[in-house]
Amino acid sequence: MNVAITHTGVCAALLAGIAAAQPTPVSYPAKPIKIMVGFAAGGASDITARMLAPKLSEALGQQIIVENRGGSGGMIATDMVAKSPSDGYTLLLMAAADTIQPAVRRKLPYDLERDFAPIARVVHGPWFMVVHPSVPVQNVREFIALARANPGKLNYASSGVGSSAHLVSELLGSLGKVSMTHVPYKGISDGVTATAAGEVDMIIASIPASTPLINARRARALGVTSGQRTPLAPHMPTLNESGVPGFDRSGWYGVLAPAGTPREIVARLNAAIVKIVNTPEVRQAYMKQGLDPSPANSEEFAAFIRSEIAQNIKLVKAAGIKVE
Image 1 (cartoon, helix red, strand yellow):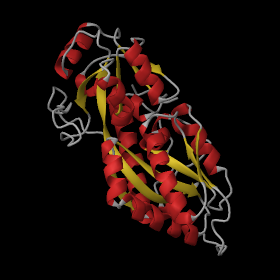
Image 2 (cartoon, one colour; image 1 turned 180 degrees about the vertical axis):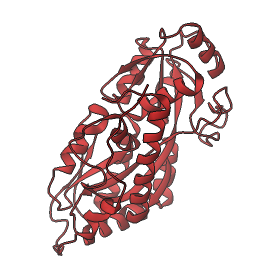
Image 3 (cartoon, one colour; image 1 turned 90 degrees about the horizontal axis):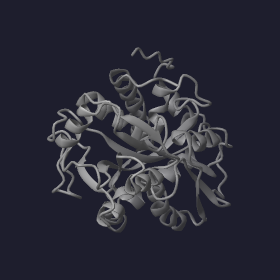
């Protein structure tokens, strides 16, 4: 399948919001700050934001409000933040899925490289490949064999078209040479619940979202998506070693502001977030949730985002994912 993608050149526009600084009120922050999350409660993006919020509130001396606006693979919240005032009071908890949208959507109401000022990456983490207990397989190889024997009959859940769960599952189909049916849900927690209920056969979901149902034996994990086994579940084999060579994908989450946010505000938020995430208490708390702290400064985060967009465009083309 040919994929036609119109993509603006990767440029320094990601940093334009930082460069176009205006004088910052000494009183910042003078009112509560809102962090928008583009996915439903219970997923890794939501957990990342809600664990960060109280510590950031302490550091800044203002209330931090986390607001979930799920749907469209995170696009709803992303668009809202892009169109918000550039004053540091409305932020985005960006997920890896946001960098997939330019590859799977012909038109977006915003431009990730033009409309945002990256502040800091916070964490990253792999996903589990999870099936309903009734699916007659015990490992990834058996799942692939079953899917090949029943093309199009097995289905998988995601948190929406263009979400990380969608792309990583399509990549599994491409590398594993299997055909499955996509069933999008509003959020990853909804998709995991649907898998546990037997509405769908499989989902590739974040460790925080899937672990409770795995522990309750309502779902079964077959493998982890990172190239190497995760220390959070060292017994869990990777897809790479389980019949899908070369498979290596992980999620990540960071904080952005609208473009044009004053440099001083971005710098203050970055310093606070990096300091918080590097504390032993917070690092341990994130690790317990299956998330690996990986704070980065604004420039590093901007370069990382550019790289992710480029990689995702290549992955979408290689997997033959239809552009909406």
